[in-house]
Length: 110
Image (cartoon, rainbow, N blue to C red; front, side, top):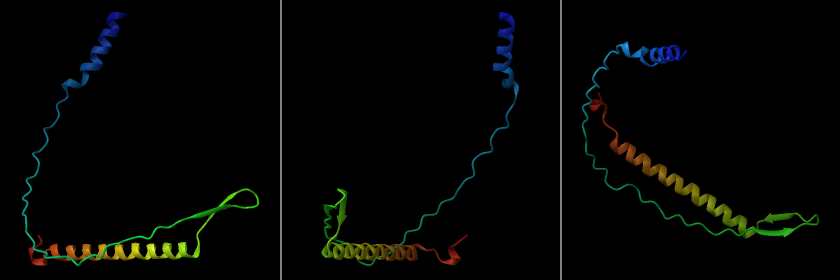
């Protein structure tokens, strides 16, 4: 029984060693050309400053906690949202500036 177990284990461990694999082809050579681009200065971005928002809370008649904003809180929330949108538009403009700056002319593309 031990001899049979030994033979089966040997065949399973050594069975695939006789299979020859084809060697992998060499990796392709990639010729990289670096270009330097003088983009100058991008459009200036304004500093984004947010107003603090304070949430008020109270207990209602059932004992549940209710959170609310005052009219000033809603105004500050609206201001912060508009500042966030303005900052995102300025970042998009800077990104578009750089993308236009580094874009290769059609005759240089291969």
